[in-house]
Length: 246
Image (tube, rainbow, N blue to C red):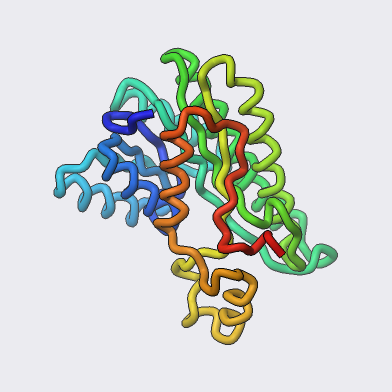
């Protein structure tokens, strides 16, 4: 798929992997709807991108709310007339032992990470069926492939994302809709860095045989690949510096 002039939605697009993906799509000539719960950041990014001549349009969204996701897709169609690419990237985590985890905290992680992907795929597919196909990429995690103590809810939600990705890929391949997921290892971000994690950061790096954490742009590069390569569907693409090779 040539991404030039294609219309893409990126949820969680105001920071981290999402923002890197927005930038990567813009560099490819795509028209990008940057969707995020953080309205001030989203609007500021839209303003800066627009001033540089890029097609970046901000739409506020709460991916855990089905009506909000439906509105996001509706606004995209009003703006651009079609939807070619859906990147279900927004996500949250919750740390703590399973026997101490409150049901509300568990539900919140599932609502954003798992239900949000369902809602995004549901409304994107409705539009893609009208135009002859499209691409969906879901952000999962290495913790959707292996377990980690203290990450029960996150493990559950990201494992579900990888499984539903394969199910959707099989269901909609005949409609020219490809569905894949990316499974990043730990990525340098606002909350995951040496300053915020202290000594824990060193141990985290040690889990990655390549000797460092990932960069958001490296995950965005994988997302672009999954959109461009038309023979890939049903793939849970691991980008983890060797984390899961142990």
